[in-house]
Image (cartoon, rainbow, N blue to C red; front, top):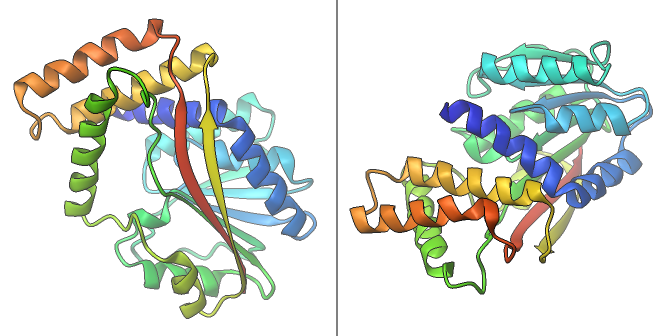
Length: 261
């Protein structure tokens, strides 16, 4: 069930933050080669793979993930979109030596690099996989979405974010790497950095309520052993009320780096 919620969360992120994703894909499309061969690292539910195949004329996308459940979702999405001839999947652990993807024009890594056990090794593998002049795209979260800013429940959400950040730090996730420096050290050139400040104000579409609900529900589940009973009860109360709320906003920051091999 937790895995299903993560897939839904990724799909909702793409739906609710549509403008950000569209701007990003459009930017990449201007920089990518014609009919690019794309590798989507840590493809997750496949929202990036689908968007790249839709928006980049003639693109052929290889979605790579360690999870067979995720890749099954990617294939299902590709079939529904009529894109099975342009989206393939490869099951691989990217912390191990990478499989041979063949010629690659674009490597797309959206919210996946921070999961790599050794970011320097992953970037070296990306550099080796790309064709000369190929494009590396890294999109990372500076902050996870906040939905209750300025409301009476802001403090509850703040507590969840603080404890989740501690948990990610203890797990060794590379959440706040200087990716620009790392990319340069890996031998890439023409590094461009762009920050996206997302601030969506009410009224928001119903999907935003579900996005908030799934996000906070997952956080509550992951923090069960870290929060006191009273704090857990407070989070549960907020989650239960989310579907009917009309005062939700969405605030998050993301940074994207484009670089050339």
